Length: 393
Picture 1 (cartoon, rainbow, N blue to C red):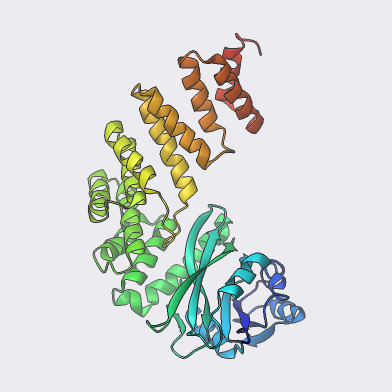
Picture 2: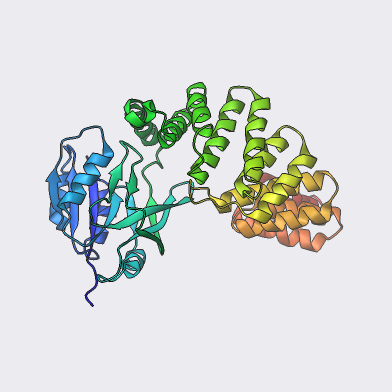
């Protein structure tokens, strides 16, 4: 049976700098590439054509879904992979997506894969490959979502796409201001749709407009819980807004409500534990942080960076236990932190301090030398090294 064809769809505007890293590498992998240009003035269209893409003009209408759907209309392949100009996919991941495609005589399916956001490393799952069929299209003026018939299966593929478009703070702010205008004018926001309220609040929070963000996130958290990952994230962000505006009571209450609704949700327990630690309530915080580590801190629905959160969680827990005199528990927590981030010198320095307190000088020395290999100018590591060597420089 013939395999289905797989094409790439991309919408661009002034992306000449990014296209060599995003579009060019996939041209030898895909069966076709369709690029919709919404008004480039930097030679992006000519560059895309030079790679072999089919390029179409589409006047910008303040609606990302409209542009994506226009690209979809021009596609000629059985399945489509959507990419942005600030996305990269490796040949291995592209082939993993191709392998995940159903045969032509089988029921069509939507394929999800991971997106890693740089520089934070956040990881979220997105519907990236879909059949060109009636009823499969994008909705939403910004942060658009793929919609498809309910009967259509959704499969996971062992593939990853890298997204670097928000790595530069100035560019991230520019995009945030652009997205905010689109969201505030969107019909879904005006009608109180959860997804639009969440994205508007999240964008305002990223722009540090905390009081405005709080209003949208309150409405989101009080509305539908149908999208449980994003509802949970809206509660976490709402707590951040309460903290930023000085209402610690409501910040804690928001997190308490989240953990009561989802007691087995690791990120919720982590953020509550971190809040309690910041409030000087170490014993309460330790219980929440230990539970978070046991449950796991992954939530690809909104892009929780599980390794980073886990490292911070274990590090804070280690500090609390060390300060309370539980050296065995502290050592175990710091070892967990080390496992989550082997290249970070901090857990080794903390473990070295514990070893010195316990009189295990050789163990402390070993840890300090390794920490200094990783960070030669680490102040505390250098201080401990001098202490171990009897004050020698």
